Length: 449
Image (cartoon, rainbow, N blue to C red; front, side):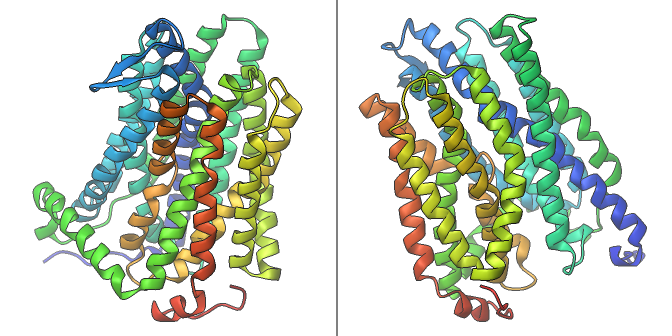
């Protein structure tokens, strides 16, 4: 007979210690999001692939595909996200069924950090090494995020979960922005050659990720699970079956399914615009990396205020209306981006400012809405579907970009093609009857919705 497990609410000091440790993981891995995914890697791998192809009109080969250099990075993103979709449910089930969440988080975090550190070795025409390292880093990044998010219900009660989650999100913005600022100082100093500065910046994200991940590794703790479930084979097999059961169960909540579809579509657009912005600024607008990093750095810090501002607007006009309004802004941003002039840094900064205002709020308010339309007691199960389009996991958007670049050889056509995600997401969200969806899920309809 096993001893009863101590409920975390009974030890507030220990719970607060875990919460503070949990915040630090967002601080740690957000460096990969900002420095690697958003700023440096897309343009750098594109230039590496161009060198290997002998010019922009050539092709490079990867996993049997012949790709234009400018389509190489978006193809890598598509492949990595397909791998994430397969791997993340299995990782989540292993974490839940074995109870070894801390160890599994550590394995994937340090695999990702090591792969990111390896970008320092990518130079010349080494596009294949860069591609393989990116696949490992992005897949492990997503897998670790699944385990990280699954700690939230264990370290916080329902009444404090929104605050804890928001603090983690904000801490991530600050951590990712701080490292990006340090890399900007390195890049602007001229102390090292440009290519070396990029490689050092990429590698620094791996060092940052690994170093600060030590804090949650020391503070988070595993929970007991039933012994009969704690086998890797059964957990892996159970994950596939559970995913099927969750998808089938969604048919009982058609309005929840409709909201989820709307979110996955428009957030795919959000993530793709964020990830593609540096490449677009570099390859189409001809802006220096200084301008790119400066704009992304601005976005990183302004997004915190933007999220808080949209939350205040939502309290006045309703959360759904606020999200819909943000999608109108996203549509306008993508449309205007098509007409930006080459070398127009001020125009790019203006677009980046508009993105910063709506970026955090779109995602934070969407998460709040989704939490209302899922059945109580099954939050983690349903949020595993929600996370498909979270950080770095924009599958459809990267696929559309790859096809647009491959067929038209035009960055402007590629960027404007993303409008379809915001238009479709807007229409689907408009027709969702949220009060009814909330009641059908067994939750109370809040005053502002």
